[in-house]
Image (cartoon, rainbow, N blue to C red; front, side, top):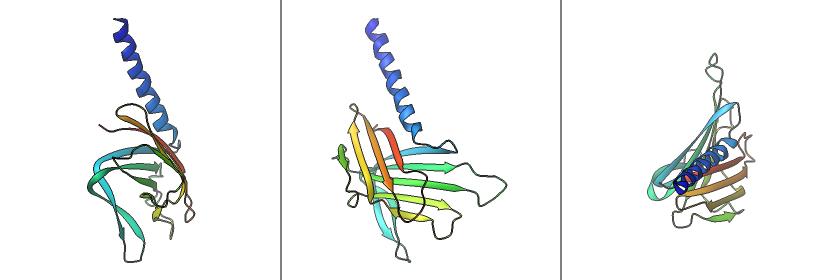
Length: 163
């Protein structure tokens, strides 16, 4: 009986710590969501103005998508503000730490009514690490800086599940 109770307590503790880590990144003036997309990859395309952007397609890896939506004023149609981060993961190499982000498929997107400061931006500066917690859970940490546009989100701590 003691073993059953202690096992159940550990599950609650892990899920509580996952919830704390995942909500810590999100500013209080908005909502954040995460999507873990299995068997997907990022295809980098170029628009007619020469700007690169990612498209999520079927593939051998996984894509982690983070989205922050700032609470807007419903009286104004153009008050919306949203940031997204796309991280392509190699299923064969999930554990790593790197400060060289130039060769990684990492994109930041900013969507708002701010002329000339919206769209997709390649993340080249920062640090990305993924460490294994147990058989199915991994902790991702990304801290980054975009020089081209202002950003609200500059760090993501997220525990994700491979199932």
